[in-house]
Image (tube, rainbow, N blue to C red):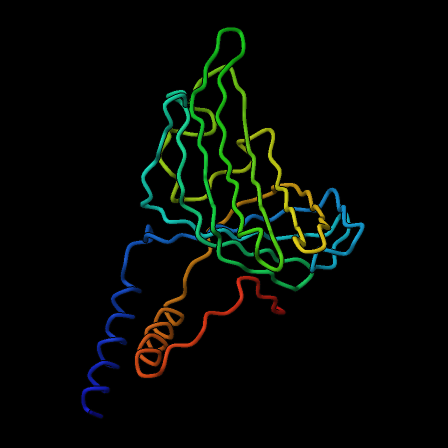
Length: 233
């Protein structure tokens, strides 16, 4: 039994090294938005973060880069939607609030050119957990640009696997909406979008993750943690 466990451990470590060698465009990708808060509305103290206008914030979102795009019957051809976001994390004043998403749709608009109105490109998402969770969080990103020529901000409707240049979009903002569903109290944060950058997954973290997988296989399963986790960074 010990030899078998050692073989499993060796396989896990080898898998970790293989993961490190994967191309940059893996299936799960995380981007980090950095900006400054422009409005804080929280009359009942629902937001679990100390927040004030002018504070710097970060919003991390993880998405499945291989998700196929969809378009409803009435959706125009210059719009495509991706049900791709899997996780959100907000960082403010050294504290993180992280949660898996139960809804996370990314929307791309490319070369919506209208007579006398120019051409519009836009990129954004709406993502949230569930209203039955102890704390509901919905994050919205909206970035749009209107120019005389096509293709100014987005090259196509393909889901970008590299961060977009935020400066290419004239209008851009983030809204974070918090709700205590039991008390029916809510709060809102609005912020600028100053930059979007990739968040690399270190090779050491991949190896550690492989070891954790092995450890979990050798013990009794445990109940998943709550969907909202607060931790100091």
